[in-house]
Length: 80
Image (cartoon, rainbow, N blue to C red):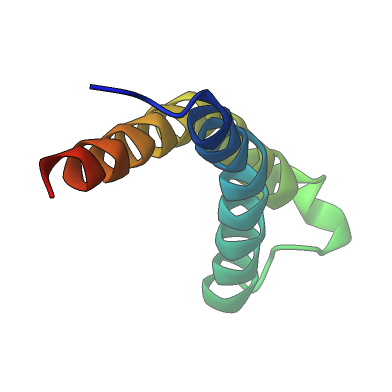
């Protein structure tokens, strides 16, 4: 079974870099929609810190999902 290292690294980097940024903006947008105190002076950046924390926490699982998708694609192409 031959794995393509370039695809593996590409999907891992997409998971590691792109997904956390998207998650951060989605969480920040939802926080501003559902919590009216987000972005006000009394909030002191709590909503933003929470969004960044969730983005950072999602980096490693997203990278592992990217690697799994790459391995699955290679496995499916080998079985044909």
